Image 1 (cartoon, rainbow, N blue to C red):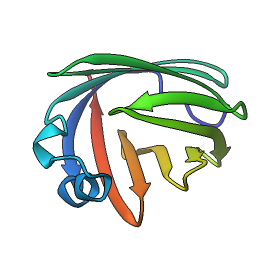
Image 2: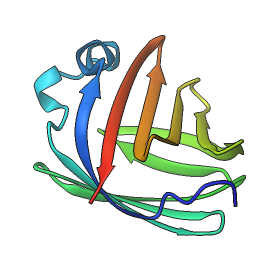
Image 3: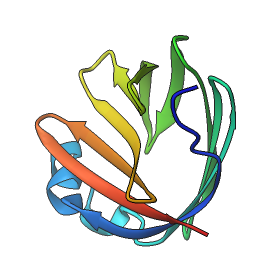
Image 4: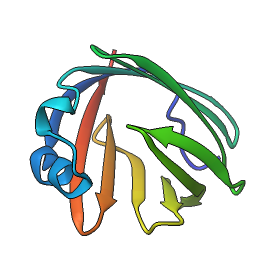
Length: 124
């Protein structure tokens, strides 16, 4: 297992959120300003529990196994794979999410239609 993401994380900051939301056709005020992320990891099996002011949702991923999920009303299909110590999820529509630990922070970079948003979480 290249990296352990387990634990409870709280959103510290977001970079590029407005442009990212615009590319998705989502009003910027619909992007949560606060969030907690609880990651349970057992080898290559992940459960991501995202808690925002609007709702709570869970997303299960097994490295190398295709998955389906609904995010903000959009159905997506993708696969997560390790790239070094980074967990990289790519979807059939060309979007990508990269999760990595940088200086003790969990950095989640999401790229859709050329726009990238970065959400940085600190461990609780």
